[in-house]
Image 1 (cartoon, rainbow, N blue to C red):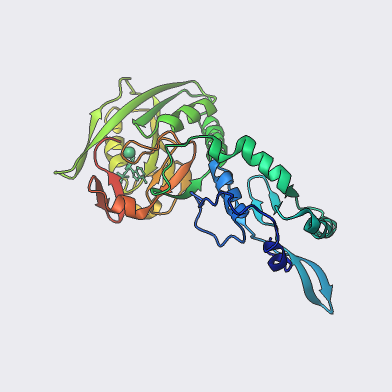
Image 2 (cartoon, rainbow, N blue to C red):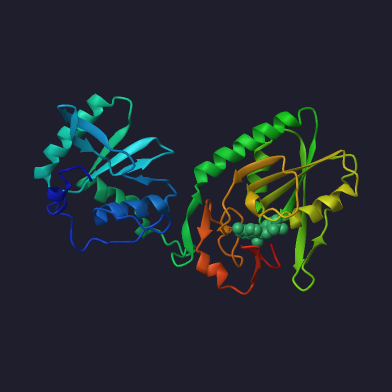
Amino acid sequence: MADELDEELRDDNGFDAESPSVRPIANDPHPFAHPAEQEFATFLDFYRIRWQYEPTSFPLRWKEGRITEMFSPDFYLPEQDLYVELTTMKQSLVTRKNRKMRELRELYPDINVVLIYRKNYHELLSRFGYGSVDITSLRPDQIERVLLSSTEIQQRVAELGREISNDYAGHSIVLVGVLKGITFFLADLGRAITRPLAIDYLQLSHDVEQGGVRISKDVDLDIQDQHVLLVEDIVNTGVSMNVVLNSLLERHPASLRVCALLDKAERRLVPVEVGYVGFTIPNEFVVGYGLDYRELYRNLPFICVLKRQVYEADASLIELHGTAVVSNDR
Ligand code: IMP
Ligand code: MG
């Protein structure tokens, strides 16, 4: 709604004053032109649909080589490659908006754009609105933003599965997962791999006093002469992974590689070779898709960044060179 008509439209869009104005949970606060946009952003967040607010302005009219009219659709949904324009305004003003939409489509036939009318918008919210479902597991006071949406994760996991299946052609694999953060990644990755495979787990405990990491539950299978793929949720300093790799190598596997969903590469203290990386991420504490903060958030289908003040104020997290690491149970 940020075209040059907006000032006029904003004052007169007829959106109910009592309509909920909910702060978006997962994206940074935006200077939304209207509460309906803010509400729509919250709605998209709830469904883990990535969005950008007014990222593009399309010139519509020119005079003497100067742009005299622009149109900036309210939202762009990168995963759907779709622009969304909300018209929650009065019917009397919709005609002008329709004219702009028509011109936009004529001038830029390759872009996908939809116009959501006031009536459809309310229908959408009442049928699928975030208000109708109770998401007690997402606390706005703890969650900063969505880092990786469910769609992004699923696509990447499928790619990793294909890559691994190709690389291990003609071989069977032993997938070794490090509990407990690996729960969902291992389940999804395992199903994306088309080679025969066995699954085993080990668990670590972090000895806070001695600053060390030890294996508290070892693998059950005999991995000698097996092609072992160690699957990790996240590699941070590499300290944990180094302990695991050394321990597995003592058992003389035929080969040993690592697949990590997330890599905080800039935090590395111990060099470890990670053959397959899902995503390289910035140095922030993340939760979801198996990863926890105090055992919470593992069941989120997407990955979020925890607010810095939450983990920095938490004594149960060790500050490890700027990155918090859960001290005991993973
Ligand atoms: P490292 O030994 O420093 O590489 O730490 C790796 C382990 O720390 C991971 O397997 C996780 O259990 C935990 N960890 C590190 N960063 C995060 C995070 O951002 N969220 C949740 N757990 C984390
Ligand atoms: Mg953990």
